[in-house]
Length: 598
Ligand code: HEM
Ligand code: SF4
Image 1 (cartoon, rainbow, N blue to C red):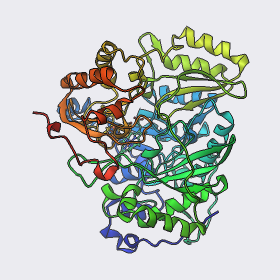
Image 2 (image 1 turned 135 degrees about the vertical axis):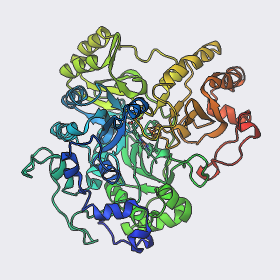
Image 3 (image 1 turned 90 degrees about the vertical axis):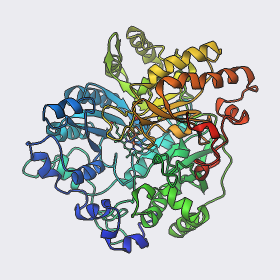
Image 4 (image 1 turned 135 degrees about the horizontal axis):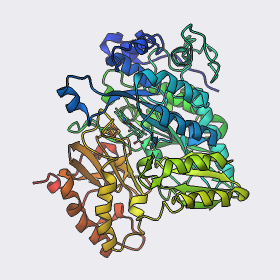
């Protein structure tokens, strides 16, 4: 296995003060410890400082405030309604029924009564107040899950295809996801000291505390990352064709499983994908990952470390908006990057192998695998598990978790799979699904089944417009057009985010909405159905009530004039509604003149 290599980065040898303000903060934090222990003990405010907030991200939490309440609280001279979002890492999205029950209880005891299933196969809790933060993170660890590196400038949750129908290969790719995740998890003792110790500093033995290792860089605390971790967040996924449900092209690093003669022979390695951009700054853009080469299963962890270490050393630490791996590759070229990776590995990567993706969605309902076990995928709108009105989704899943002997798999599309149901248990689970009326969650238009929205308001401090709370209603309106056009069974991917950071990967959707301000969105069209092409701006800054009328003629035209099997995203390019985006560098180019609304 490769070991961490020396820092070669010119920006890291520059005075740390000349870098972005997060860099000196990381250096001064004593490996992410900072003053978090003291700050958590301060009960005079529900908040923490901005610098501590930056460090807290590495521990898996964001400070937020309820934006619905801001105005009123300000009027009453109260501080904002601060609370914390906590993200739980779930490598490969696979958890046990016991862990599901633990998440269910935490959501009720400390959070807002909902479990959020995210677009990156993690659990999220919202509304945890400061005085409950430590206990919540401790309880998450007691369930043998954790939150370290769920956010921050490190490798985040490693995702993999939940793959219900190829169980043998699922086991292999899940194992790889876990290995990469373990290998790249920060080794700092700060996490255990802050969250898993009592007042006397005695640590609880819940999850294994990492042993100190000295890397080639001479750093005994963080052998891979060093004191300054990565320039920016880093995201890794593993896909098993023909499904691209993990959206490999949106990620910094990806592994595409190559299966030949029913054997997993290795992986095509992809690098340089990412979604985030900033409105009005054409220097920032979403970008598709590209294939770097091929590696064997045994080489994959070392390849991951080598890729991470090149980005650690060459990523831009001066301008955070330019710090993701996608810009390092865009600026220096893929060949340069491959050369760097191969130098660190000490061998060359193989040539890309053939593969093809069909789609980036989920398969709903029951599927039987080769071992005779069953897997049921539920559609969960916005990934939000809660009891609301007559629909007792959270209760239903709790009752199922009490009897289920397989696992719960989170999908990359915010859905949930009740997986590895034995033939003996299937009837019992089916009865519960029926009893709680969630046996046919997928009896919706194919448009809705292929939709995703990020959290946005009221919790996300970066949201410019609604997403999770608005998209379901908007789809109901678009559904009328879809049904009129006879397209209820035709899958079209549709995604919405409250800002251009792109947490629900809107730039890969056939129809994408990105918030610009209250009730105002950019509308993008023409993403690839398999998540393999970026979309293009079709209308800038349209108002929410204009959306349906804007889309209506395009959808009707598609219904009437598409070619056999032609996807919506391909159709809008052929019919010249937009020009295809080839790569991130032309995302802002070739716009039609009528993009800006009158
Ligand atoms: C500069 C870029 C970004 C920033 C500052 C950012 C920040 C945030 C924040 C504050 C939240 C919490 C919202 C809430 O739960 O209330 C969030 C949610 C999330 N973000 Fe991002 N984000 C960025 C880009 C991305 C991208 C590009 C992805 C994925 C490709 C992503 C994945 C997620 C996921 C999975 C969630 C959970 C919520 C969901 O599933 O809707 N983020 N992000
Ligand atoms: S896309 Fe923007 S609004 Fe949505 S969760 Fe991410 S940061 Fe918040």
